[in-house]
Image (cartoon, rainbow, N blue to C red; front, top):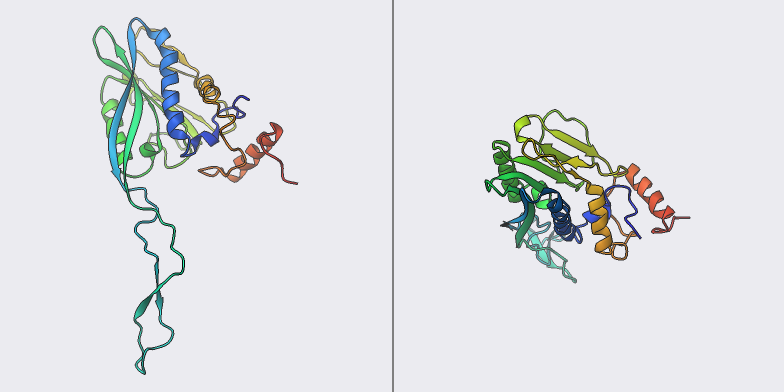
Length: 265
């Protein structure tokens, strides 16, 4: 069964699946662009690796001991000293551990000059959530904005704050930024929501080369088919992150119509 959603499939945003989806989508974009750009350009998959030290741990080092105020004083003198009482069952906790982050992205390279003409980024959670990953990504982003390199940023994640842009006060679930070096600070921002088809966009190159159109919807649907997500995703499970109330109602009706979810009676 094909992707049941007309646009982005929110179940692919799950932490259990997104790293794989990110990897496959990067490869699919490269595969689609290579025949359109050879022999002048090369499309290369690049990778950055860095470490995050426990920034995203939810609970850190909580022992199986609770602290309570003793309701009965030990002697005639009133005491406000708290005492530790061992619980009968251990608490389930999460530890602050180092996390190695590996992020792939694409570079379109002019084979004659060896210059990077365009950078294509598909955002990962580490790029958006507060912390070292976002700081490093924003630094790279700012450097590109100050260069002659074109830039495409694809955000298919509803969680966390979007990356900063000016002149936009419209909220949207997802977005695609297309920044041509010769038009900065102007840029094109494609905004779309869960019920929308993912918009296609032109890949900026050096003038006067013809810019290929990236049909991101078709590429995501191909990833969905090739990875057999139709038999992997559990459409009865709770979404992470959760949908808004209106989107949840819409998604429930859609999945019920396609028999992927049983309607409540």
